[in-house]
Amino acid sequence: MRRKEFLRLAGFAGAVSALGGLGWMANGCRTKSEGSPIQPPPSDTSTSGRAEGDFRTALAIPPVMAVTSRPSFQSNIARVALIQGKAGEVYGYGGGILGPTFTAKSGEKATFAFTNRLREPTNVHWHGLIIPPLMDGHPEQSIPAAGTFNFQFDINQRAGLYWYHPHAMGSTAVQVFKGLGGLFMVTDEEEDALKLPSGDRQIPLVLQDKRFGSDGSLHYAPTKDEVMTGYFGESVLVNGVVSPFVPVATGWYRLRVLNGSTARIYNLTLSAGAEMTLVGSDAGLLARPEKIRRLLLSPGERADILVDFSTVGIGTDVFLMSDPFDGAGSQGKSGFKILRFYVDRKVTDPFTLPSNLSTIAPANPSSATRTRIFEIGTQGGGMENMKGMRMKGDSPGNGMAEMHTINGKSYDLKRIDEVLKAGVTERWVFDNSQGDEPHPMHIHGVHFRILERVGGRNGVQAGETGWKDTVLLLPKEKVSVLFQTPTFPGKYVMHCHNLEHEDSGMMMNFEVR
Ligand code: C2O
Ligand code: CU
Ligand code: CU
Image (cartoon, rainbow, N blue to C red; front, side, top):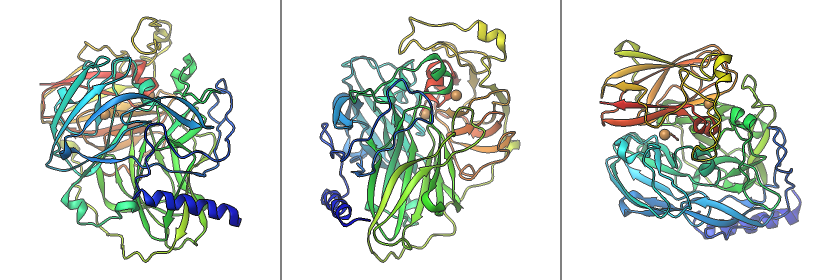
């Protein structure tokens, strides 16, 4: 590396640590990107047309707020320069894009005062939290502009990286795309005892792709085709920063990764094929660490990844990247860089990787009292339904066509599709065997185990052996999951976490009685 560049990076590193690792640039005042990444025009909708920045902007880390501090938060509109130094409108739960990371110890009570400062209705869903449905942002629970809502619930679940985002009827995708979303980190004694890397050695990473207009504003306007495939952005952002870098020391790091994109799947890998150690998935720790070199992470899914930089030389770059992948319809055609780790200092790190992480009992499929089968990705089973497809010009949100279905039905806010008994074990089968697009399927209010995958990749993958709340189905795949139905009665949803699919009908209601 040239000396001039090194000095500039060293300067950034200083600025970041001066903020105690909380280099969060609120109120639209963020680190100015050096150099100007060239953006393709918004009309370039190809999934391969991607604009990589120069990886010289410091990664922002969202501020941390303990739920016991009874935080208040708002959905806000802000003006922030995300690209080329041009300010544009974003949504967020703080002063800029995204929101704070809420933290809770298992067993604590959470209380939030929420205010909607958008010009449209929104609500807040706590993805992965096991809480009463009236607190969980069912699309029916609309909070109007200027409206308020007091959330109150107990955190009574495993340590894990959960998250919160809007779930407003028909406008989840656009509101998440514009910047609404944040992390919710739950810790417990089992996890604490492992002494995994913490402090500034634990880095939350929210991965999102965005499309920008030439004026630097976020551009969300999916065509009919993009509602089918999902809406892809040419720029990949981490924690709201385009192509960032983060200085690291020669030790172990814990990366808490969320795919917060509306549709894009990442095939995560490190440059030079370096090894990653997967220690957790959606709902907490795996039983044992898994050494991996690649990990498919679909929208809504989380990964808990340890990386050991101890053998990397000072002054070296290591990139978190997405590798091309096969069998995912329109996705995975090309690879790209996401984040640059810059190894800038030596430390001695006493951390040793535990051989066991958590006790996870084997899933027992014979305990299921019922099996339900959900056919996804076929527009209700054939061309006759395609022809009957309705364009809903007057629907809320973006007026997306009702193009996606589960068991042949597109989402109806009022219709109860399935009735469940509380607290029993069920087996749900997601069937994408006729489909030709990927679908990350998510169930509210439960954590499930993956029993099997038939077709496509065949078999339970790395990172799917623990507790999950979202599972990726590639085309031709059929996946069975097992879970205990919620104990809180009320109305929940199950849906595809490709948010364009969700907003265009790939969602259903289930009621627990
Ligand atoms: Cu993140 Cu309804 O989901
Ligand atoms: Cu959810
Ligand atoms: Cu889908």
